[in-house]
Length: 216
Ligand SMILES: Nc1ncnc2c1ncn2[C@@H]1O[C@H](COP(=O)(O)OP(=O)(O)OP(=O)(O)O)[C@@H](O)[C@H]1O
Image (cartoon, rainbow, N blue to C red):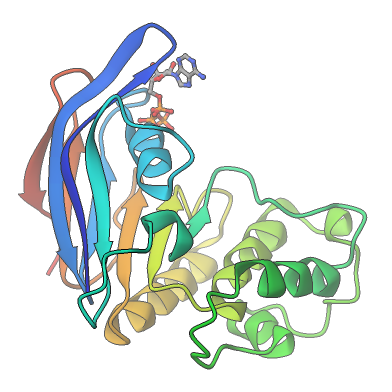
């Protein structure tokens, strides 16, 4: 399985945000996007997730059987700055919606809603409306969405914003587990996530990006 981006360029409004971005990730690998505010990390994440059309270049997904007919957006989880949960629905109702909406049909076993809540350290409160929760609790449940439906690619934009150090460690462990199971991770972040098998792409705005290595 691999995810390949070739010669990507993206525009927001009238401005070219980056050009000449290429990378190739195989199962188990992670790419961390770093760079100053406004350098294009979220834009690149959204292009790979299929929410923005690239100005140039392409993103392709090849599954473990060599199939290339599925778009990356069909096989990716996207965790953006916003949590994408309805305040009026309970946590359980929100996760139940995402479980059926995101199901990729692969029949890969996934966590139950209760187990996903336990995995993010918040068992026992899935009956509460999402809007009642603290910012960090909301972020934890937004992450739990990744556990209730299987998708081989995780695209994470500032996944640890609003989190305490316990949750930082917990998310890192869940991401490493996804890698161990052969998943691919693309994460935009300002702080090291403590991942294994990770490369860094330092975004530089219009100049594109510079590949490097971050972590073990
Ligand atoms: N809808 C839009 N229209 C025009 N310009 C936009 C739009 N969205 C983002 N931009 C611009 O694109 C550039 C890249 O933004 P982006 O959000 O990708 O940066 P980032 O590296 O993720 O920043 P941060 O670290 O602050 O999250 C910024 O200059 C931003 O102002």
